[in-house]
Length: 323
Image 1 (spheres, rainbow, N blue to C red):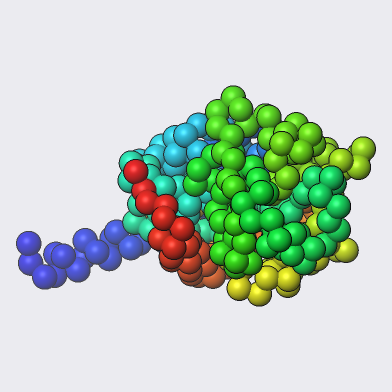
Image 2: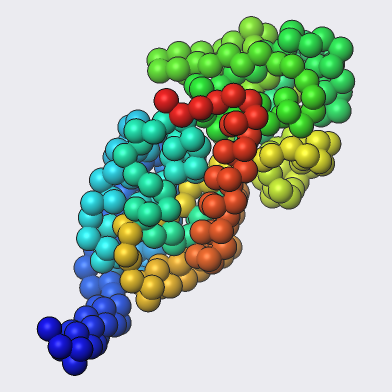
């Protein structure tokens, strides 16, 4: 093929992409979600799909494919055409912490997907059993230092965001706590064991936190986030008491298959950001402890790389290796 023919083919391909982007979307968009049905992340995704439908003028269908910590949905989307009609709605635990725990997730976060926007955050909260008699983050750290190895914290399993957050807290505070992983069907027992003081510490999202507060058996000490949260502006930020603390990412974001054309990425990010900026939408999300984010694509991509590197260093420090 001559150079002229190659250039002509490239020009035609570029023109096809531009024409496609200009008419996009002209049919329903499917958001493929790996989140568990009924969770706060699932609720936020469905709310966003409804809002995007109204904005875009085409149906935005929220399709759940949960399982294997979101890996089923991620591996499905990576095989689809990068045309903007199938978008992955994914948790940070799937694309950030997941690959740090397993070599067999089936995808490469940075090669198999095109980042669009990090959508919403679901901050973890620091909750302790009231029998400890502790009212502050500083008080908890002091107690843990006086009683090394006597405090238990629960998580939904090794390598979960809860596990990483607990270990990050141990490192930053210089304390010793025992990790108690609840896996599979045992996940539902964490809250009961926290209420009965079998475990003393847990890091739930806000809906689970709310369910525990009545009765006074637990105390909410703080939130793992980089700023005060609107659903509880009175809550201290844990990192304020522990300046060196790594705040483990807990967000739900949007990604497309690798090769998603830039004009489509720009359109989708703009629509997601617009939806999250709507006062009614943001208010509904904040009521359930969800923080609207909607960062630009470049910031989302950079934050994923930074978070991956940060947690990889933490994993090495605490002896976690992928299996």
